[in-house]
Length: 146
Image (cartoon, rainbow, N blue to C red; front, side):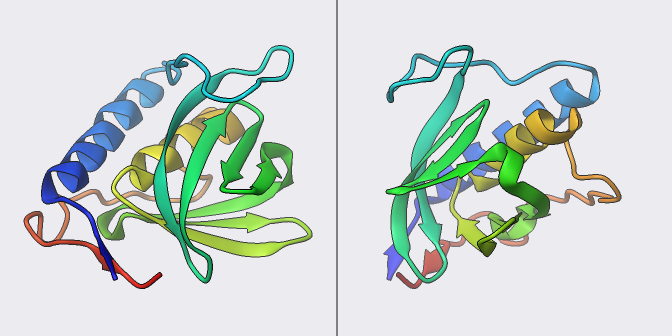
């Protein structure tokens, strides 16, 4: 079992809410200094640990063109759909030719907004009506099986 610190859960959720507001007003995610080699015109937005269902803990790197989960790389063009679950710190990506990929972790709600901003120019997927209460139990530890 792996556990996340409650402060990380709250920080990730708060960052998601602030970024969603920015994107809703026409803003864009800010790029960071790259930690991986980037392609021409590509920007990196962040990197952090996530739990990939069925694969355990991986380092996620999000760029304007790719999502890298450990040794597996997905072109954002291959993402057919996103199913965010911010109150569960989870996101399911429907990837063409691969099927669903579910990730969880403190920064996954923020990652979902970044992906939506890049894919749809919006904070949420088309047809998704977010109801964003505070996480059900803010002080709980999110425990995930590896």
